[in-house]
Amino acid sequence: MNRTLLTAALSVLGVAAAQVAYPASNYARLTGGTAASATASTTSVRVGGGTVTVTTAGGLAARFAYSGPTDDTASAARALIATETDMDAPVTAAQAKQLAGAFDKIRAQVLGKGPVPLGFADGLDFTLDWTASRLTFTVAPHEYTGFGADRYVLGKGGPVIREFSDFQCPYCRELHDDVFPALQRDLIGKGLARFSYRHFPLSFHQNAMPLALGGECAAQQGKFWAYHDVAFTVTSPVTAAKQLGLNLTTFQTCLKDPAVQALVKADMKVGDAVDVQGTPSLYVGPFKVQNWTDAASIGNYVKLVTALGK
View 1 (cartoon, rainbow, N blue to C red):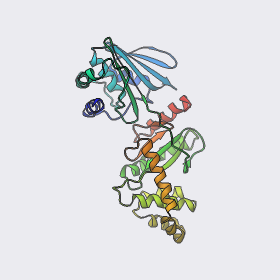
View 2: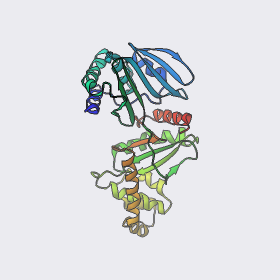
View 3: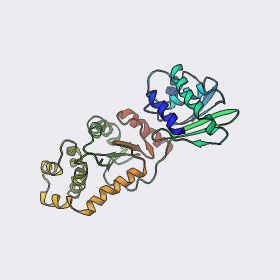
View 4: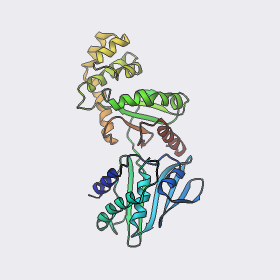
């Protein structure tokens, strides 16, 4: 119930991204607070009656830790909303009041219970510690593990950007058409990051699994990335194979191979393990990217992961 109340409140407020991998100064502006002090790795921000310590790496936010008076839920709410948003304007009093109400509703459940992990936002860890004298919380990106070996990789250096994708997903095509070229130009081509494709065909897309299988079969003929570029524009793997001039007899035999199906399902199993909720889902190193539509945001995650050495 804790997760539901806070998630619902943030959803109503239109919160959809996060300040992880943005400059700490941006977070201070969103809170309407003031940066009280700064070191090479932390920035202290005064938010109402509370204080947020922003841990940074490479000048980018990696963790937020709030501490304030136990009854000042408005300041806590303002500080929390600012960690979870990419909006341009500072958090308003009305928005803070709305989320403060959600805090008040869960107070009896968490007061004096020690640090309580709520994890209410996709890809972020949120831990609340509410005592008789202080209300504290931390927000940090969840560190996912268990990706296994990357089979289809572009680039020669830097953190790995992993995309779990579906060739029939319109948003995946949007990433491919509108974002991927910038990643190739600014990150992959410069040796700052690598890019790994993972299959995650959705069951309600009729041709998603056949197209994923086609990717594996194209790979057997040395044409995975060429197939990857074509597959978003067709509904049949054979159509893509014809466009690429692949050996169709070999290709069609491959499509029926249980071992090929096992490769796709292995990618899907990994996706489930790292909490893929839909496609595309993008990860940089161990972190899930909140805003995959923005190449600059992805680039910030690359900088953060590089600075953290993860």
